[in-house]
Length: 496
Image (tube, rainbow, N blue to C red; front, side, top):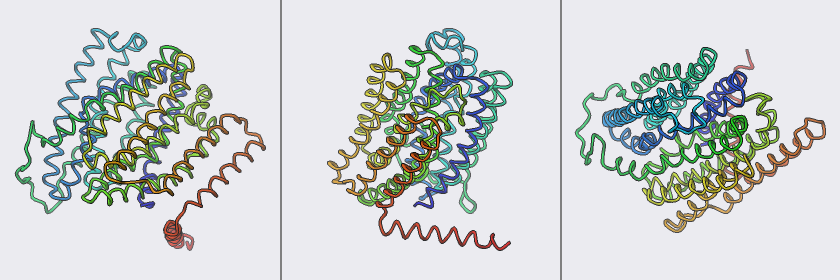
């Protein structure tokens, strides 16, 4: 499993490096104020795209893998119908959203009125925003995790090229125009990949045996209906928090917060991609609750080790990371990086066990606790932002995954008798404590003197040494086998 996650992580790292070029270029070209405004526009688009997607991107990785195993022809037919329905919904939203922006732009908020031109063009990107995640998950549904990550990499290239060239050409309006055009070309290519039937398989799918409604199995519509409130509320909560900061403190502060959030999203982007393309298909395969629990627990253990090794250096040096990703104009946001990184890490950790709740079809509980978490986020952030600014937003954001983590574990224990092993529970607590300590040190000691460098190196080395105590005998043997494989791979090259 470690080898699979490292490979997926490597492909996602390439994706993040491509996006780093975009982030850095836009930070230099736009500055904190325009980046802050752009972040609000993007979150508004995400609210619409995710709400009208009816969870079909998530349903792709939930329902398509069994179809692929049973009959690739049925897989292609179902994927095509899902894509068609999603396209119809999102094109309608594009037309309506563009019309509203021209006729009554104040509907989207007074603070966005100065950016009306960019917003009107931004709605043209909705088909890309909705279809790209669906196609990536559908490729993963073919049990092709690596190809799914390659598709994500190609999207990152399109996103970066259109961002840099488009802003240079015509500001935010130019970016949204170019992204809409080139993004649709990528979507067309991805759809052909998803719906291709392997050689040797007949072209006509077998007749559907499941009850159908509007071209899709009833169980998918039930899944969409159960998730619809969450597909709206989750992106809306993020938009509400960002807009609240924009309202009280201006676009510049919103840009600083976006820098801190951007670092955390980079962490989740590299380490969290395996949830969708690897973990979800694995736990949705047939098996007993104990079998699925074992797969999830092994995944969680590996994820914790990867987080503990890779993330602390970023938190020990947040000023350098923000300067590299953005520019010195965004440095005030470095003080808040630790808060939002903890949010994303805890989101990934809770997401591992949430996948089990969904795999066992406990959708009502999943939606109920997720809605409660998002309402808690908005409530806490709304109460704290006026007095505490970005810190209030970070504390509110941290409340949501904390509630999800606790609620998920309690539910799995009471419903299925599944308990987190004590060793795993201790490892999770240790990793979170290391991240908090590293972030505190990085914020309190920003200067790069010999003394602070030595202190941070000592902290990181101590954390790695303590982390080794959590390795089991099997973990050590797996690492030894991987090291042998790397040495054998390098040996022929050293002879040339």
